[in-house]
View (cartoon, rainbow, N blue to C red):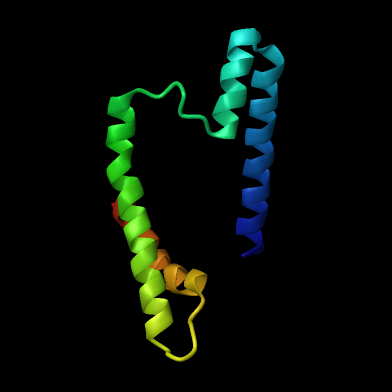
Length: 103
């Protein structure tokens, strides 16, 4: 676990440095685009791109709502924290994807 945490901190520092370098060398138009990109603007997106991503966004929202429903009903009247439930379901799925990509 500490190795994973340190790896995450190192990757965060590296990406932050790359974004800072891009900000430093950007001209006005690029800086404006980079600023809106980092704030999450979809202003430059084209409809086909949004249409391609939309099913995944809707699937993620549906899975979150279903996980919340299960978390509220499985141990009723208590509630299982949603983060614990999604981690218990998502971590094995993620490990399976990693395992498949290795072979």
